Length: 339
Image (cartoon, rainbow, N blue to C red; front, top):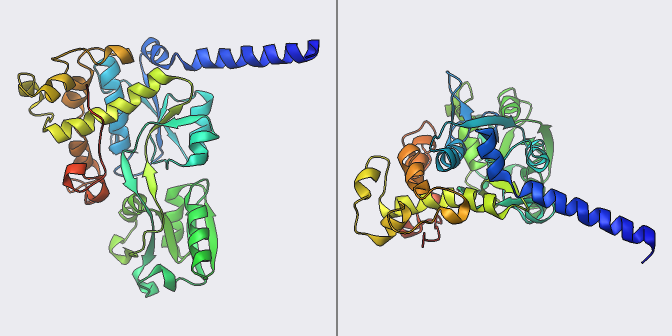
């Protein structure tokens, strides 16, 4: 190897090591800063949306609140940074945010090419179609020649192209930058159909002037595992975010809720005692306190509680648990044990 080659290699290795060291200190940076920077959707009811008082609420928001509770013993030390679909991954890669919790689909290219790690699936979803009832169709296969509103920078663009090609039908894409713009496009008659993840269709439908005029078609054309993501190169922070979700899922399975978590501290169930930090210290390996999971459940709730409040029957969306039920109830939500 020439002198120049050795110099270039040394520079590359030095840069890589520098980036790795910088990335490996996310938890320390968050603690030092005193606030978690959480990237969220700019406005998706049920998932991340500011209320009339400007308070952020939603399923994805509660994941961030859970992280804050685990780290600070306070669920509200979070700075929410609204991002559109095009901005979200770049914001994470650049360090603008500590975690992306914004209805983002876990795909192979995002997981391997873009320098991010998905920490789990907090909502199992699939892509569907929302139409105006006046269109008079009952299946997506009847949409030949339809104009379809699509948000750019999302997996929906490729999914809809694949679906129409496989079924030998045509369409014209009407592309917008934000999900709100796609709903406005449908309402204004700029397109016949709006396509997105079903969860997003539920959220956008309630924003329409006449929600009852819109109906979802029965087809689900893709797998959309939605979940939070962190930058690659920081296993400690990856573990923290991952286990916040797992703690919520385990808590629901074990029957530990916001209301009874203090009572459960005296439980004889070894799984509950480990979860709540009564037996052994499972926070130490993540750089957290022994009662990290207790804090999450006490201050935010278990997975079932945040689902029902934000998107389930206790919300305006009234989405059934479906695939997001616990594995013991026929769903896919399953967490490794705290052990």
